[in-house]
Image (cartoon, rainbow, N blue to C red; front, side):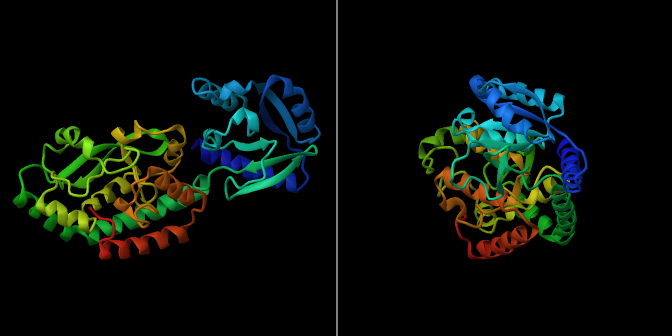
Length: 339
């Protein structure tokens, strides 16, 4: 709701500026102290800006950044100006502000692509790159959410006979529950329980510690074994056609997931993240996504996964979601990268 509110405010302010009405925006500066005065003087040349405060570059350090963000929210800041040196090549920090609906201006800029939706602006004659809020917020978020709810509800009704058949097969195949629930990390780092049809032995999580040495991923972030001994006979079939993921439609209905988006990972995997990996948590996780239609389990380098996730986030549209869904059907039927 905060993002939606800020989105409405930003749209209104932009409209009034175009109509040449007198509207002034509260802005904040983050840079080295010796640059505060100079940067503020540039910004003040633009009459619609009010500099509400400044902060040292170290305010973006790990243990200070949340305090800084809270301060900006209390001041009602809608735009923040950050020096390139303050970022120290940590572009992922921009998402902290963007996720709160605060537009980011980086100055001075480097002439290389960073995000798709960036604008080159001159603020008081000073060059800077302006990054809008993440695409899937405000109006876009609720459009996507409405589509998710409608389609997930429809799919659950249509697939109900398949749910029953799978449940019976699991019960006849091996002892244990029909469904498997695991804690995953979702939107804004919040934990939730993901639902899946059980495809492994009931003691699978205990056995994983013994199998860690066999992990086939390069960086060890994701746990993958091609011939995992914990998978049951029915489980192999379900995984081959991704049928074990069908219960996640209930997660979509509950608003914990989207049909398309970055896959939610277990806490074991997230605990191994580097800081820039957390960007994928700024959107709802999905049942399928670019990762799933670009190789699935065949991708063993997590940096490739992150690049695919960012590509999706930065270029999101309903058309892209539809294209990914069509590709998902083809990938599942061909059994590509499934194990």
